[in-house]
Image (cartoon, rainbow, N blue to C red):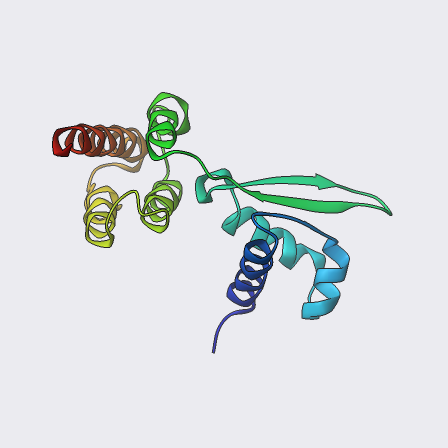
Length: 157
């Protein structure tokens, strides 16, 4: 059986697809619809609709409050340049790195096999060193892989 978070995510994604990538929702109405607490909606938005996932969230609280979700459609090279220049930084958690790689695969920027290999290379299991250094090394590895993908794409033309 699917978890409630997965069901809410799929529901929002289907609404986004119908509305051509931009959607306004009432948090409380959505919570009522799924018979859950508004905090469950916040959790789904924070963990499944972040910038790393390719979405922009704007929230307005209060009686007439709403949540606006916008799917970001950016050019592959622009997205990768953004990741290299400011999106990754000098360190990155395993979870955030996995989100970036998943988004690249979902947007067909990389193949599923490439995504699998990249995820394997940046996993905590692969980076078997003290925790204090893992995120720094992971960021360097991820940047290096993205640079290699961009270089490879240029050679294929």
